[in-house]
Length: 303
Length: 298
Image (tube, rainbow over all chains, first blue to last red; front, side):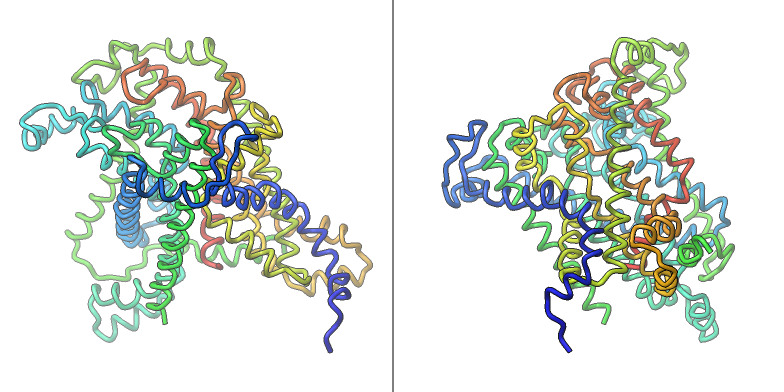
C-alpha cells in the first residue's frame, strides 16, 4: 500500500527537524554561492554591482584562448597532481607495509613523524621551506654542498631553488608532498590491519613467495582504501595554493602559477568576479571528471 | 555499553597485531628498507626543527652561510618582537575563536543531521544526503568568489561570523556521524520510545552520550580544518587585529620571496605550530579514529 506523500512527509517530520540545522546554513553558504558562481561565470562582474553585464561564454573563451597565464596554471596544476599523488601513494604504501609488523611503540613514532607536517599546517611549512630553499643562506644548498652534490649538479654554484624555472615547481611539489603523506599512511595501516591473517598463512603453505603475497593478496585487498586515498588526495592537491602564495607568487616566469592561485589573484584581489568564477567552474569540471574517471577505473578493476 | 560499537571498528587499528610477519624478506633488505623509512621520517622532521632553531637566531646569524646548525648565540629578540610588538596574542585568540566556533557548529550540525540521515525515514533523505556528500568532494575554492560577494553585501569582513559561517556545515562530519549512527541498534531507540521518551529526550539522553567518540573525532577534525583554513581567512581579514594566527604570521615575512626578517618569521611559524602540536599530542587517538572510520566503513 502506498501511503500518500503528505502522510509520509508528516511521519518523517522529525527527520526534517534534525536536518534543518545543517540544511539551512548549507543552502545559504554552500548551495546558493555554488549556483551564483555558475551564473557569475557568464557575466562581466566587478566591484560595482550596477555594471554587471551578461556576456555569455566570453569569459570562458577568453580564459582558454587569450589569457596569457591561465593555460599555464592548468598545466602546472596537473603537473602538481601527477607528481605528488602517485609519489605519495607509493611512498605511503611502501612505508605502511614496512612498519605494519613493528611494535605499537615504533609504529606510533613513525605515524607521528609522518603526520607532523599535516598538523603543522601549510603556512608554517611554506615559511620554513622558503628559508631552507634560499639561494644565499639556505640549508638545502648547504646540505647539497656538504655532500658534494652541488658540484655534481651545477658546477659548484649555489642553486636558487625557487628562483629558477626548472626547479621552482619541483621544489613546491616536495613541500606539498611532505604534508600529503600523513593521512594516507594511517589509512593504509588500517587497511592492512583489515586483511585477514589466514590468507597469508594459506599462501605460505601453498609456497607463494613474498612478492606474490604482496601482489595477489595485499594490493587487491587494499584497493578500496587506495581508491579512497587516491580521490581525496587528488582533490586536495588540485587546490594547491598556500605554497604558491607564500613561496613564489606564481613565479619565476609563471612557472608555478596554479588554478586556485589565479582564482585568488583575479577573482578576489583583482575583483574580477565573473572572470574568476569562470576559472572556478573550469576547476570544478576538471576535478569532477578526474574523480569520476578514477572511480570508474578502480571500480572496474575491483570486479 | 558506551562506545562499544565504535570500539569494534577500532579493532581494525594497526598495532593490535604485534609483530606479524606476512612476508619472508631477507634480513638485510629489511634493514635497508627500514633505514630508508627512518631517513624519510627525519627529512620530514628537519624543517620543524630548523624552524624552532631559526626562531632563536638574530638576523645576522640567520643569514650566515654556512648556516649555524645550532645557533651559537641564541636570542629571544624574535620572540619578544613577535609577542610584544605584534598583536600575535590577539591572532592566537582569533584563531581559537574561529576554529573553536567551527568545531562547535560542526559538532552540532553533524550530530543532528547524522542522526536524521542514519536513523530517520523521510522523503528526500537520499537526495539531501547526496547533496551534502557531493560538497564534501568539492574544493571550497570553487565558490569562494560568490561567497566573497555574499560576505561583502552582509558586511561581514573582519568578523568571526564571516570566517565561521561557511563552515557551519561540516560535510565530512555528517558523513562520519551517519556511518556511526548506523552502528547504534534500532532496538535501543525503540525501547526508549516505548518508555515514553520524547524525540528530544531520545536525542539528548541516548544519541548524544552514545556518539561521544564520533563527536570527539569531528570536533578535532573541524577544529583542525578551521585552524588551517588559510585562504578564506586571508580573504576575510583585512584589519591587522582581525587576522588569524596563520594569516598574521604569514604576513610577518610579507612576500615569501626576498629575505625579510627571518628570525621573527620562524618565531611566528613556531608560535602558529605549537597549538596544533599540543592538540595533536593530546588527542592522537581521535585523529586516527576519525581518519580511518570515515574511510573504511564508507
